[in-house]
Structures are given as C-alpha cells and as structure tokens.
Image (cartoon, rainbow, N blue to C red; front, side, top):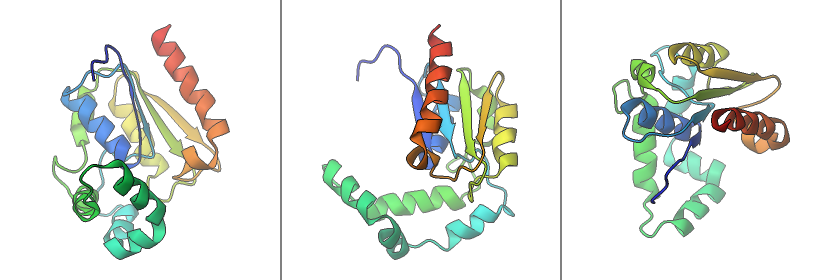
Length: 169
C-alpha cells in the first residue's frame, strides 16, 4: 500500500491477528490497539466452550449482515472457508491460533482494551497481556461488553485518540 507509517487497531479476532503480526515483526506498526483479544486461550477457559458451540448456520443467524458485507466487499468471497479458519484459530492451541509467549516480542506501543463485562475475554486475560509487553497500557472500561466499540464509541474513541496522540508526540 506504500504507507510510511501505520498502526493496527484490531477487535476480537482482528486483535489476535494484530498481536501476531506485531510479535512476528512481519510488519512494523507504529502502534497496536488490541480490543477484546485473547493472546492465549487455555484449555479450561470458558470462552472455549462458547466457541465450540458455534457452527456456520448459527453464525449466519447471528451475523447475517456481516456476512453480506463480507460477500459484497470481496472479489472471491468464500465465507465457509473464512469460518473454518476462524474456528481453527478459536479452538487451536498452537502458533496458528494465539500468539502466546511471542507477544513479548512486540516492540511498538500496545494498548490493550477490555470491557469489564466481556463474556469472551476475562479481565485477568487482558491484564496478563498488558503485563507481557514492555510499556503496554491497559484500558479496562466498566459496564462494557465485548462489542464495546459498537456499543459505546463515544466513550472509547477519546481514549484511543489520546493513546495515538501520545505515540506521535
């Protein structure tokens, strides 16, 4: 794309991808903001049980609008393939799933954003991620769910903007 400077803001699965990219040094982002993202998912994590119950038809029922957007924006859409890859990531325990200990390799500023009422990512999970990366910041928002970017952008975006302003200052 020819960008000289860029940052990555990723929510949920996008946050996992952002963490993996920054940890691998495949890209050199100016910053990463990971919102509602796991960095590991232990076998006994309650989110794993939620992920195991999701199938393609259930996803279509819950997020049909997102699938329509995906199909419209992609020249060769294959939602079934995307869903299988996402499921593999959610339930995986290897380096193809969560970045795990490799997050310690992240060298850019990291903001970990967590909703205190997130049903997928625990407060402990968010705290531990912030502790793994030198200089990382943690934003824990009370009364916020996993969908906090959609539910309360007016509360979240000022914090994201402040974080990015401190990076470029």
